[in-house]
Image (cartoon, rainbow, N blue to C red):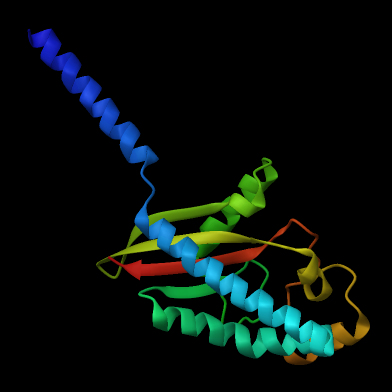
Length: 189
């Protein structure tokens, strides 16, 4: 009888572990929804800016609107929303903290092992000043549109505009499919 109880307990434990692994984390789902909206809004505004005035016009959207869109997303959600990278363009706004650097480096390792950049993400509950905080990052893959300002063959007028607006810019030399950076979100639990 005791063996039967132990076996039943073991089966129940294994079943609960399997269910827990299959149940998506609601914080991850919420973060992904915020990123989808942020990315869609930003990409739409960039495409409209390119259509209206070329890639130098898109730089102005990135400089002014991208931080504003990110702030709007933070205000309408319970999350701190941002973007960061190991190769920064705007060093004043997007500098990664130590946790983000570690995650971005891990993303690069995962990519080097063949993982699809479009699926690379990471989440963790961490202690921030004595407060449990849920942190989530999602890799930003370099797409064709990105190469006009972040690629290896940037037009001279675009490079001149970047040099003027972003002294110390490090965010060039990417190829399609590279990890351009990451969306980074956090929320106190």
